Length: 443
Image (cartoon, rainbow, N blue to C red; front, side, top):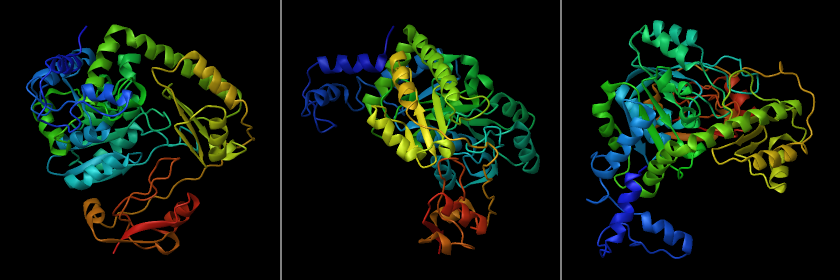
């Protein structure tokens, strides 16, 4: 096995050259742990390659990743899935246009669309995950949007979402193919899906591209992600698309961790991913027996999402209690808890978590008591609203104004209002319900 980026960094350091180049620490930082990290923190040099120029060890490492994932091309991102999402949007709609978008989306996609002049058409999720969670993007709803907008350049879907709820990507791709429209997927929370089972990965289900945040669930440093390209037509311009948004100083610490993660997966790391998934499934069943409300239907086994609707202490206080029992949740707020497993999660970790959850009392709650979010009307192009001069006003005074920012309470992780949409009475009520006291609007 080999990890070209990591090996090139070690080889370069062994040469003992006096560095007259970035970074400024010159391989020396105070503190033992930082000193070790600094050893691998090198800039783009003839020995180490050039990420966006597609040269040297970085190219070799990406070629090995391409072979492992079986894609048309796998590219490395040191800018997280944000950079991958920006690149996917650029590749599909380089001069703007219409994109059919799941309403469940990260703000990085909203910002990318504004910068590229993309006009989003939103598809709201169904209610199959239950009233307290974001639902799934239905293939039929995507087809309906495509029929209404024959000029659509792409379909953009988030799956799994922050709660682990998974949409039918294969079904969505089949519908989109009838219109000759590519599907791109925010798979930030599903980078582990390929080693878990290749058939679960969006590209294997027909997606043109996906953004995989490897650092979320795999042994990769924060900010490390894979841009997975399933169609060869996007390969020639992919590096340029990433370079348009990416830093000209990519972190080699992050890049080598992506490289070594791929090496680790090839050398047996897949077994660790599958074992963690088994633990996650068992944990979900145990949590269900304890009476916690979780998302219904197909979900990623690495996500344990608990609605605050029947947590006796609420999500925020419950999070404090978990921390007192040495459990640090991914998310803890008034509306719920999210606990995220990874390839490094061991059996004893799950046992400790389950014992801690047993200390949280639950109350009876009807699954029918959730309320639908408003569907505000577009009054201005997204780009115009997001870049326009704005002012911040109290929420109760915002009715009739045009939003200049995304307001996305979590849960349910469906934006109440997007830039360019007019805030109506239902929006004001929903925003106040989720604790949004102020909102930025167009002047």
